[in-house]
Structure formats: structure tokens, C-alpha cells
Image (cartoon, rainbow, N blue to C red; front, side, top):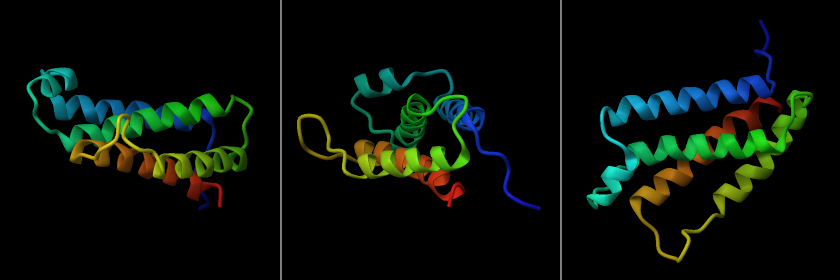
Length: 114
């Protein structure tokens, strides 16, 4: 059957799906409220990472980008996300989940162009 078309609209759609999944997880609260309470919420941070990484990808491509260009940009960004460090140093479950979400989302597009 072949792979579905990969274009900027596909990236945008996947980013929206990640936002919807985060919204379903949070219910009637916000990520900021959870953080202010000092609670850890790795599942939410995973989806936030996906949203952020796909936003990074959208800024690197344009409406005319080919699937190959999108895959190349995703590979570059994935390497950057894999090596990101927590601002100010240190690691946490939330940060690891955030980074993992970004790496996973970018990996999906890196593989699509292969």
C-alpha cells in the first residue's frame, strides 16, 4: 500500500494530536498548577516534549519541504534533543520524560523518510 504522505501538514497534525493527548491527561488542571504544587507528572511532560519537538521541526521546514527534507530535519533535531541538558544542570523524571517525548516524536519522522 505504501507510506502515507509526509508533509508539513502531517507534522502539524501530529503536534495537534500530542496536544489533545496532553489535554486528556490533564483534565481540568494545568501543567503549571501541577508544577507549582511540586508534583511530578512524567506522562504529561512526555506529551509536552512531543509538542515542543514537533514545533521545532515545523520551524525547520516549510510548506514545500519534501518527505526527505522533513526526515533530514527530524534526524538533525533528534540528535539535538538526545543531547539536551536540563537548564541549570541536574536531571529529573519530568525532564527525562520531556526529552523522551521529543526524541520519540522526531524519531517517527526521521524513520518515515528513510
